[in-house]
Image (cartoon, rainbow, N blue to C red; front, top):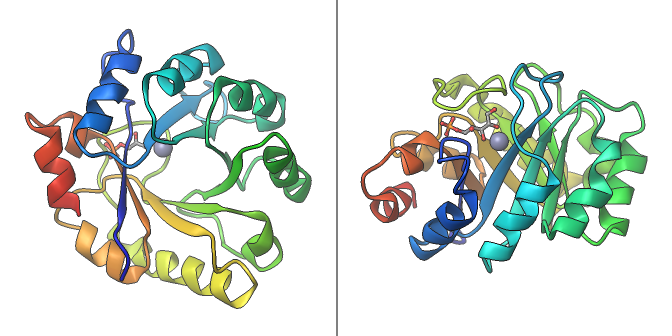
Length: 216
Ligand code: DX5
Ligand code: ZN
């Protein structure tokens, strides 16, 4: 088993200090920064735009994944690519032209992520396995940090890995987002997770470096 990557979500950090907060998470051992972008439409909450993404990207040397929980991600791809995001992750629920959208993310010079809400089937992966670099399995309903992890979705993590491997997407990484902590991280890695996205467990901890170590 290769080393699992830890991607702290900065949703719960001081929103006026996201650059320095990201830098200190990098120093604490983070492999990626997970930036939750919410538009107040796809999910009820409104968070940050590409200006803040640029501040975060310029504060760290590790990749930033912009998790776009927005209803019109196509309008934002160029701006988040120019901000310096390494990954742009869009939701499977929002666009009937997902193949085009994923291609546009790669054309913009980024790695393409595809996120699935808890109730969304993974069927699309059969046809898009070669078009994705990351698949994000949501283990909470998106919109808020600090929610309870849905452990019944671990089988979906395994299914994502299998669908990718059997349809030409063997290089793509599987990430899990929502309520990830040190009591479920081992089971998630055993189910096939390559990336553990974790917000409150890391940023709500007195010792984020220790929290990251415990997740691994
Ligand atoms: C939920 C977000 C998650 C969340 C993670 O809508 O996509 O990234 O902030 O935070 P925790 O780990 O607290 O669930
Ligand atoms: Zn997220």
